[in-house]
Image (cartoon, rainbow, N blue to C red; front, side, top):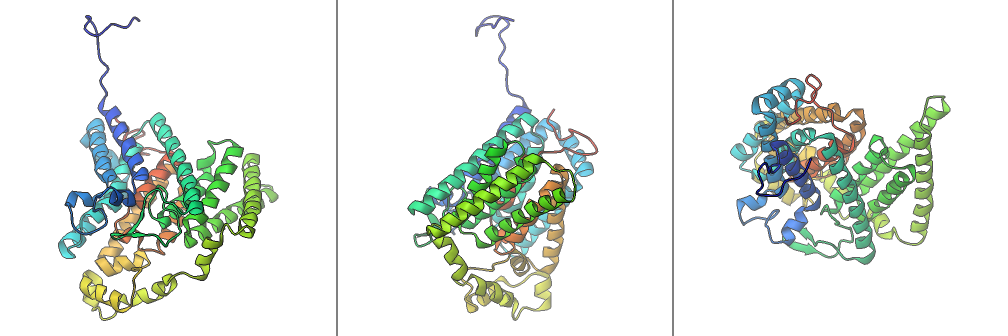
Length: 432
């Protein structure tokens, strides 16, 4: 078939379809989500995490892009078809949507809290779930490859910042630039977010999500990212992920000894990785490379005291307020009285303090339903990363504040572990 020049009879321009536009917008949303942190937004002058400024600047750009991707996906699939397919095949998404509406009412109408926190923290993951599961296998695989590259770059930048003391973007706390904290900020902004996401990535790499790589590359990536955990300085994230990786290795070893079928590649990967981690870790400790990280276990700068004192933020709160709508001024006064400068270091406690017991319990049920849909979409291999995420997040304010962490976890698990569509109607979420 010969190609006709522009202007000749029969010339046609292949215009992108709605499916193509939805896939492109989803890809852009995910890349912005991982590459543009809150620190970057503050660095370029947007008042994302501080008071004042335009209300639109309080929303992460990836939230707008994910909603645009969702709108294009709805248009490509058809509103009726997508809604019916979701309600029948993914009821957990519907439950989560209603839970978000309840939280929105409680936060904005009752407690007079900003809308942007709910949009970035919960609406974006829901929108991305639908948009990502609508991607073709080729587009999803290509986006997953980009995420692997981003995680490698993030850990490499973490090493560089840890060794040199320089930062890719400044470390903001409020409007102040922090210079005394040695922890790397890299691409994901906050050191603890870096540690948490890298920990989840390690569990993905060591499980089904790492099978796409050659055994040598897989072992290298595991060791490389374990080392980066020290640069990010997340104690809970590091200790828990090392414990889970050790447990996974021990379970695989016991299974092999008991005669269970096993993958030689998996055993070799674990053996090489454990050997390298042990050898390089010993050399790093002897050489003083890990001194700053190990010092955090001796001096936590009040973090442990905060986790004990935070349960007293409810002192003087009536049962009615505790159940339905705590007085936020009273909670803030208790925080000040208790000198909780680091805030409430548990998203579970913070939810009860901000939204009340009834709303919190109902919302957590919706969040559990959403997590169950992620597991249904990718299989039981998502259980360990999800459990790790919520366990480590429970040691900080996490999703009780404005954060994009849940959206990042959702995108990671769907893209790295593979996406299954509606079980009752295969491919129902695929654009036509």
